[in-house]
Image (cartoon, rainbow, N blue to C red; front, side):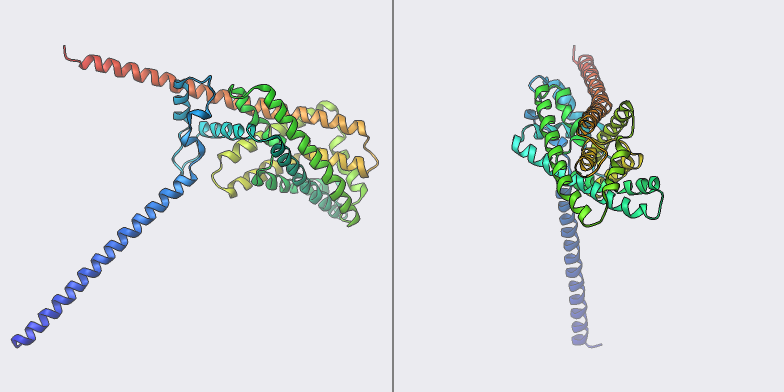
Length: 363
């Protein structure tokens, strides 16, 4: 091989090696930039997905809560692991913060949101009555009613995902700031009154307009409406009360589970399972029941005004007892026990640190 040829060959080899090194350098940098970009995007997503309890501010606590208690609450509520289920305390503190935001809303905003929920929840009954009328032609009435009731979750999904104010969902949630001495009782009672009024007015308007529309569309008949109303009313008062307590309990559990879920799909599944069970069991729900019985009062032949009002009072009280006692009180007590445990552990750690410091102090 001549020197010129060898020189050319070596130059070409060196050039190819340099190009390969350059390509490797570019690829490495691109990979590094891609990983860095992905890491940054993941960090942003994690920040966006973090729940409100991770950055609790001092102004979100009541003035009666001491600094030590605030520190303890922040510690047990810390929940920055997005791959794991939310902690018990994190769910509860998030619910308290959400409830405080509801307390701070204007009365007009509260009533409008509750009124909207009353309208939206009526969609469940509209679809149920249409399915019941259709199934009654091929099945015995009892089986048709049970199968139609499986459509119960439709209105609840619309309300919960749309974040309208539904009384039975908000019963336990709104009582938490009062139980923790953040808000006064009179504010809670006023708030409940506004939400109940909005839900009932919205539900009655839906019954007056949409149920009448369904009759004229021949989707269901007056007989179907009466049958469904009697399915709700045909019990002793104490049975209706006990059933409504269980329904309120389950709705409080639904609110808890919805807060614990990290994505919309999970929330839809949870709401479907809980409210579908309420419908399947025929439990008494005050807001849906209001539409069921009021529809029969307007268009049917079996419900009187007194029986409607009596039913509404019994079921409202039962739902309230179920939501507050079985969810808010018991869940809140568990949270307070966790706080006490953290405070005790913190005090123990401080005492141990002082003892260690004293032991290592030069004499």
